[in-house]
Length: 382
Image: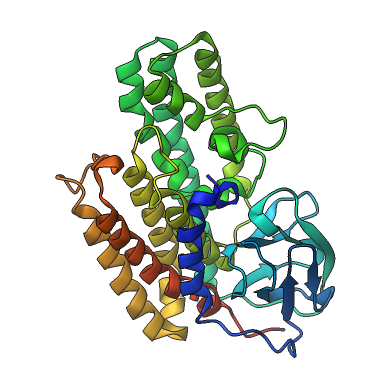
């Protein structure tokens, strides 16, 4: 679920992460055609330029407001080109994106709510980056991976939905977490469609005004907290399959670039920091570590596909990412008896000191991962 729907309880964890990722980044001078300075406050979203060359662009974001914010680059139909979440007050972040010529919107969302404060911008067609063919292969492989995850999710989700419709509480509980793994691995791609995530993965505190609560977490509440399956739940199970089928049909059409893959990997770590480490994501089932592992797997998949090019451009970064992925995976393995299974310790059994250790592991990986997009940017242009 999007970190945009955080409660106040998550603010500390978010701020901790953004402090780690933000403190290493300096503000941009704005002297490059490809750098857009974005100054976000609680009431404004100022950009240093509204037209820039197509190709690689860098948003140098500074949050001068009092609220945690996030900044999006959006297509005209509101699909996400790229985003950077959880930008704490007084911190700076950078995000690298790859855009074609056309019209876009830059949106700042103070408090990470609503449609945001928007600026219309335009990418002109003068200079187009020539992409390393290995990056084209990486994009193709990631697109295939995302489709495979969606294809594998549907049968598992149908097993979950069938158990709900049969009124079998225990079978539904058993099928719940496995049905979410493929989604969690590729969540940034799924969210590029925008309309699907609020239907299938929203929590109660993330609902917008007038929005009906549907999806996995609504059913999670029925199974673990209410301990009963109602007629409405059975209808919601059908709706979940309808919405996930929509995702399956559309995931192969997602706009994917090397930089969006790299930024998506970072977003998955943000998901871990804001929802899993805090225990808010799976507050009824306490299956947070299953999602946690799936998010890390998804981030690692993007990284591994981009690694050959990143290694040439920034070998030290690759060494650090290898080290931090290995460390976090080793730490996660201590919470399961069988390293081939997804039977993890129930998160309500994980103490505060252990949660702090997990949070530290995520932060140690998130900081270098935030630099991956820049490491795969191709500077050669025509």
